[in-house]
Amino acid sequence: MSLRSRIWLAAGALFFFINFVGAILAAMQGERRHAGVHAVLLVVGVSIARRVWRRKESAIIAQSRELTDGLSQLERSVAAVAIDVERIGEGQRVITRLFTENDASEPTDLETRGMSPQ
Image 1 (cartoon, rainbow, N blue to C red):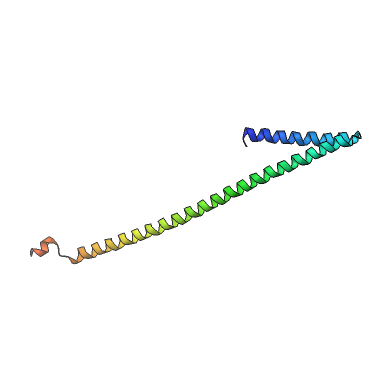
Image 2: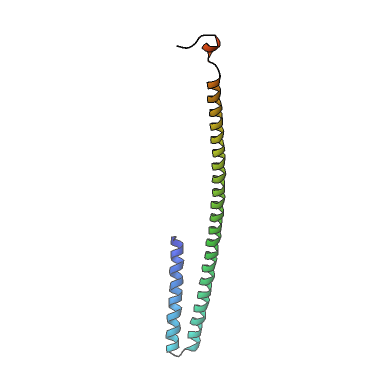
C-alpha cells in the first residue's frame, strides 16, 4: 500500500470516527439537528467509501481477467512451440536413419576399386 493510500485510509477512518462520536454526543445532549448533520455526513462518507472500494474491486477483477487471458495465450504459444519442436526432432530422427541406412548399403571407396579393406 502506498503512502498516499495510507493517508487517505487514515483520513477516512478519522472522518468516520469523528462523525460517529459526534452524532452520539450530540444525540445525548439533545441536539437533534447537530446529531442529524453528523449522521448525514456519516452516511455520505460510508457511501463514498463503498463506491471507491467497488471501483478498486472492479479494477482488480479487470486486471485479473487480463492476466488470465495473457497466461492462456502464453500457454497456447508454449504448446504450439512444443509441437513444432517435436516435429523438428522427428524430422532429425528420420534424416539420421536415412543417412545411416544409406551409409551401410553404399560400398566404400575401396570396395568400388576392387580392393577389400583389411
